[in-house]
Every structure is written in structure tokens, then in C-alpha cells.
Image 1 (cartoon, one colour):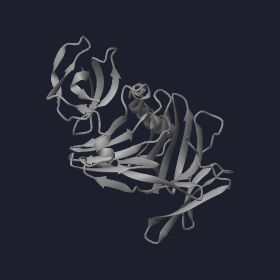
Image 2 (tube, one colour):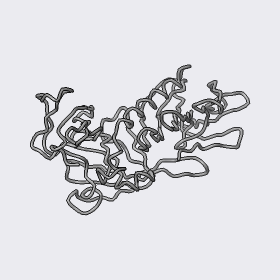
Image 3 (cartoon, one colour):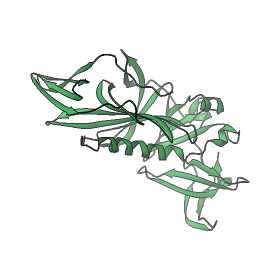
Image 4 (cartoon, helix red, strand yellow):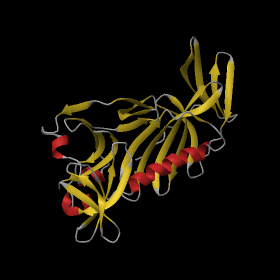
Length: 311
């Protein structure tokens, strides 16, 4: 269930380090409809009007200790998005966007963030946030989940990020876990070591860092959500545990060729051991629509023979 952290106080204030010996206090003045950054006796403001009657709801709060513009919507997907703010060089900007989403199309839940955005606040700030929400929705809505529900597959692994030979995937271990929004995040490095993360975890990318995203645990302090380093269970993929028992869907043949919409073979193919996401399966389970992430984390969609896959 998505949640919004509401505050009953009129002025919400957090202090941060703005520069040497210059702490900055952030808050929201409901009466004057202003987000403010106060540095010493100097107070900078940003006009911001909350809206609790629209879809999405628009409000001010704090997330991970940072001042945030919050959008909470109910449409194709249920979501709450937190755009955390900075005041640097006399400008309010969006540093991170965190999205807590539940797909109404396939039931997948996810908690993801992206930081290092440095997007200057303009009148179109809501469009910017909703653009990230739409992109996130598109990425999770095309994953096929009916097979884990009807017993066609026992597990549901979802590859979410790749950097060269390092992989990050979300895992529902069985149908019951899927129906109860219980999932793990697994990180595999060079297919030799694996780390698994349990509990309420977020996957947070950094726009300026192309390495694997951080996996962070969600905790609540005084009504505000904070993210901290998640505790991992580390082991080799060959050992018992999530890494061995619940591996990604992958190519089991030496080569798995792509086919076009007329079921004609193409020149491109995947090789043994490549990880894939299952998007769809034809009647009779002959053809599988899959997505694949290359070493640059670029998604490739295509059709292959299901017999070439280990599902």
C-alpha cells in the first residue's frame, strides 16, 4: 500500500549544510504558499501551492530528510513520487526523484529513485516529475506476470539494471510472494558473487554514475521516510540461497536467434547464459517475447523460441 507522510504542523523545517558555517533550513509556509530555504537571516522562497483534491495530489513533505514536492496519483498505476529539492547557487532545483509504484496492469510493485538530476525548478516541474513516473510505468507494465499466477512459472525474476557483467534484478520467489508484494533485490557480479537484499528496499541510480545502483533500506523516523544502506546476504551463486534457487530467466541453448513478426529468422541472437525478461508467451508456448539488457544497459526487445530459454 502506498503511503504519504503527512505533517500536522504548519511549518516543517529541516537544517542542512549550505556552505562552510552557513546551515540552511528548508520548510513550507502553508499560509503564504511558499517553500523556503533560509540561510542565516536570508530567506529564499519558491511559490508552491498544495492541491489535495486533484489526481495526482500535490503536496510538500520531506523524504530521506530532504524537502520534497510529492505527487500521489491513482490512474493506470498507483504511485507516490518524491522530488527532493536543493537550493544551490541561488536556485531551487530537483536533485532526486523517488517513485513508489504499484502497477494496475500486472501487479508489480517497485521502489526506485534516480539522483544527480540537478533540474532547475520551473513552472513545468509537475510535467517533469510525471515524465519520470510515466517512464517507470512503461518499464514495469510490459512484464508478463500471469505465468507466475497460473503456475506456468514458479518464480518471477525481473532484470532491472546491467553494467557490463554486473546485474541487478527484482525477485518474487513464488506466487504467494507476488500476491503479497514481497520481493527481494539480487545483485550479481561477473556471475561469480551474489548479494541478496530482503525487506522494504529501494533501488537508487545516480545520473552521473554509471555503476550499479545503490540498494537502500526504508525506515521511518518521526514520520519521515529515510533510506539507509541495506543489509546484504552474500554468497556464491553456486551455494544454496536465492542466487542458486531463484536464478534469472536465461538462454539455455548455444544461440537463441531473434525472429521477426512473420516468424522469419534474423541474423541477431543471444548466447548461452544471457539473462532475459519474459514479456509474453504465445499459445502453445512456442514463441516468447523477451527483453534483454546489453552491457550498456540498453533494452532490446524481440521474439525467440521458448525452447531456447530456461524459464
